[in-house]
Length: 130
Image: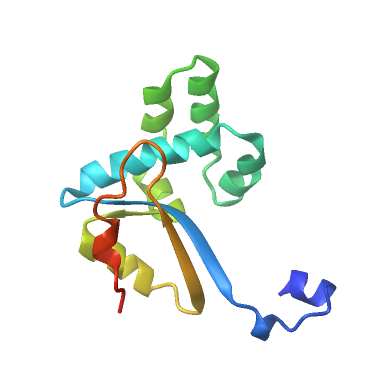
């Protein structure tokens, strides 16, 4: 709303969109682990640090930075908590992800990105989303 006001636009006229790494798998733990790698990759870039810290994941960020300093991809991914996955991604079974999408009222567009490490298998099950 603040950005709309500063640019002279009506906030009510804006269409909101969300971009989230997404992993759909029949096994919830597998989906979460896949998304952890994507989030860890993104977290290595300083422009994402304020977002992660603002979301309350400063301790995870510190562990991710330490892991990347050693070039330890697995440690970086392991530093991502389930709570961080829940806050910053869509992950789980198809029903889990559909339920999460349904909670985002007012969002006009979703970009469910599978990331680079895993194919988009499972994402097609989200469509058509009721």
